[in-house]
Length: 528
Image (cartoon, rainbow, N blue to C red; front, side):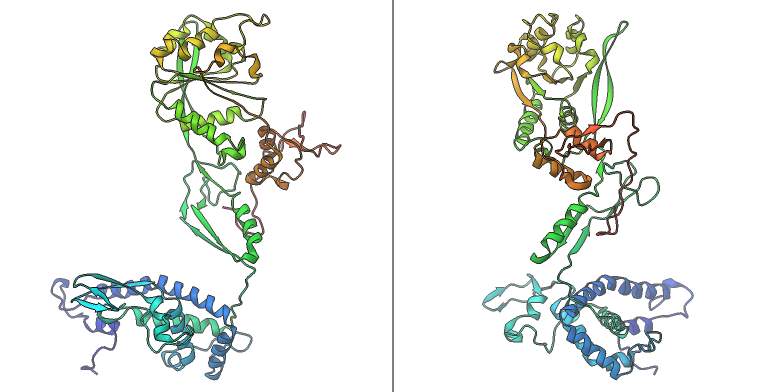
């Protein structure tokens, strides 16, 4: 026995062990720790190989129940099936595993039709010609194992024909050193499943889901759907993308699954710095920095209108253009999403400072110190919210005449504008017909857009996107963006006296319902 040659790699490694030397530096063979590391590496690297092969086995076995039955018959013949109501598990040994010829053929056939890796490579050591293709010495040759394993030239027209030889783990001196261990591990697991009388069935009505990009979320994330965290401190288990596999017969089920998955979204917190205008008697006008989070507008067409995406791109390009001037008017009824979009736009602008005039200081823009203050911020964007009082037609006697319109005219394209290069964005609720005509002149007005209620189709799509109960099926007339989000937040109630046409009303003198955590849908069984 002492002169017997090792039969496999592990035996060879063990035979090189020299435990008699005291100093690891002078050992002629491997140390015990080195052998342990080598064996552990083969076992660990085989996990992915084995799991991939098992997936293929389950797939092929589910398509061929007669093969599963024949494997179990072979196990029964060798008295290896579990008996006594599955309480006794016959042990598996090297000898009885070797006797299971058909199970071994199935294992090899799985690796023929579903090799654990699709390509292997070799470097040509001399010039040669293969199928009229000249291969030069030193070139790398990629060998497609699946193509070889199913090539009709070798197997005949029937691709299910069992080959006499194949190389799922490569061949030659560079073959996988752990293939014998992988064969044994794979065959053992497959036989063990058949021992337990497990039957894999083909269920074409199901869909498959693959999640990629798994990660742990940071604690500071935007959670618009109020999902319950997986761990304390608001930590979620996340994935970055998902693939849904289905056949034509299960398209509706896959679409439903996709809609449900779309409700479970987290977003990174994106903020922009805004310089808010302040004023007091002692310091005059000055700015104070505020941070503003970007709202999650996945689809501008959905939130506003089909043509709005083009308007947004044009506006963003003009606003970020260096040394540009002009006025942009964003107007419409309350609740149509002007401020919501403005927050989104602010976070999209990267190269200019943003000066924000809050509604309570709009009238102060007529004070003598305002223009000198703005001159400290050239090439910036001035944002004026609720600007009705400073853009009204100056000839209307119902409004007190002031210097605000003249200031805007001068900043937009007058001499002061040529020096300051400021863009101005005004939001307001009044009709554009009441605006001073001078502000609407071509060359001065950059973009004028009216925000309106959502169409019935977009409103229902928004309800689906936001995960609102009922998916907006009760909406039959245009509805504002604010009303949609009010539904989402649980702060509206639907009247039962004929207002099922999409109108909503805010309940007064009643505490709004507290938002509840999103519950797991039974279709999925998880929610983050």
